[in-house]
Length: 352
Image (cartoon, rainbow, N blue to C red; front, side, top):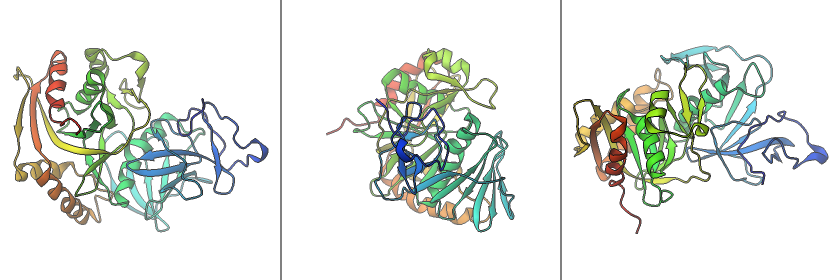
């Protein structure tokens, strides 16, 4: 059966289908909206996305009828614009930069792709060298651009991984945090592989709400190096090479519909070579806040960064006051990860 929103084949943006409306494009049934534009429906971070371009790694959404989605993604016309003003350049292989063009945000990457973003995040124009969009551009959009755009809609974006329990998230989910090398991605893959948990996000998690904090599903899958794949015994058909990473893989056991999941605990990871068995230590509110501040993602780390951080903490502190915060110290060996996964699963109470 064709599905809406999981796409492998490109349909010309702006193409008027006429009598061919409803025709199958690849394995996807596109729909006609917004002036006979071919659109694909996705969900990301609790927001609906309508796109004239298909993207792998996004979760399929449900049609919103004649209503406009929260974010509309379209193919830009002509050459990618040059910024009128530059704000910030993030370090790292993405080469991501933030600037402005005629009052709109402009994000560019060392990989293929420039993204012209409405001031309020409601539209994104994608400028790229080739159509259909390649995996490199998709990776930038899904793993770097969209998580930051959710901030414009009032969400908190946290450098972390997030998962929902194997009951479909009815019992809640966890956020895994830690320094680079703490094992967030490997442990995320272990929980998905050993316990059947749903991966809600890999590198940047989206947290919404305050009185009832919810983890909103973001990008599918998790990025791993081959030793982690081999150490966990992951199925090769669920692993694909990532562009620009010299061998890094994306493990994606995406199983279908995902829903926002109540956050049950923050878990800060500490992988230690001299640790022989996993141990949990509950942190105080002050310790938890100190740990999470460096992990807060800001849309504009230059101009409004102080305001963004204060705004995020105004939401996060009350959440951390009512949500347990743990430090998990665990062995570095792959052989221990099934046991570590069982320890973590105990932090999610069974649904009532």
